[in-house]
Image (cartoon, rainbow, N blue to C red):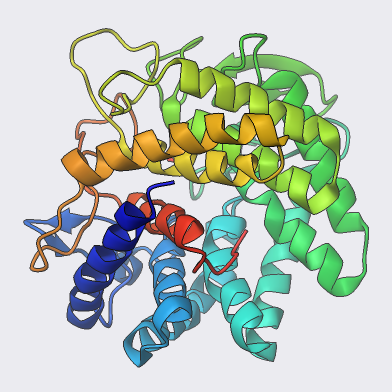
Length: 375
Ligand code: GLY
């Protein structure tokens, strides 16, 4: 591996993020306007991405022990308590919110209040399990609309939330959490992953009988398409279920979804929003590249020696394309990644999104050996 390049990335990230962390001490950002972070946490503390800024701060603190990162991480975690007290704002994304904040804090320091927060979040996540359909319900109905229409919906992204359950189960020596996580992972394996290795985004079950009804288009191009960030969640999520459970079937699915992703990487190394979107408009999503790279680097640890290089090389191709063409290295601009897209059919595309920055940093930290393991 080109360790000189990795060291250079590490150095450039530290210069850039140190400036950004000092300029944005009291925020929980989601995106930028004219290169300046917004404060999504101020207006919408329950937003699903609100854990990533804290996660970035913990990764940076773990590597440097500079107080600014610790201070920013702690303020994010405390602010998220308002979400814990808001039932409507508690959905399946508790893993994305409390693993990179409270669990990271607990892993770093053994803080008891952080452990308590993360266990409350895990209890709530476990409570979303539908025992007949054997899936974790993704979203609540929109506020004030308790018609149950989302009661049967599960999404591939939830694979990344399962580690909160694995963690809670280990912490409490209570196997219920792991049983629930594995049952959801098995359902996802059966109904979300197609024969060719591509992943569906949303699957709808009958919440009463548990029967599979159909899949729904979601954030990619449409029904039957191949949303790239969802593919990244599958690669990374299944390998995480493997490392927490040792069940070989999750390793196999992670490989299958990674092989599909790799077969579809364009020569440029830049990732579209959907592998099956029309040639124009050619919307990109840099977050998908960063997430898939993290998943492939993790996967490379568990495959036989002769397969490791395939996944590492693919991850490095994705990261180098981002570093050369989609990273903004200007210290005066808050965001790192550019051209991130939340959903194909949204009005806006190709802007900065905080989890893109988070996963790019996590991937470089994996290569450097400075990662705080969060998932
Ligand atoms: N978890 C939602 C998304 O990936 O956009």
